[in-house]
Image (cartoon, rainbow, N blue to C red):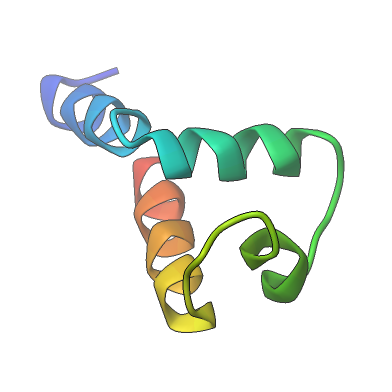
Length: 57
């Protein structure tokens, strides 16, 4: 793992919302609607978090 990819991963996991989304996805597939349910946020906000996680690998 390079320094840049490590930085991306750590930055993505620094956010508690993204960690919660990742924990939910570890249980299995989920729609954006299902992922947004426990949070007071819009679907576009959840999508943004998913993009950050995807970029981090």
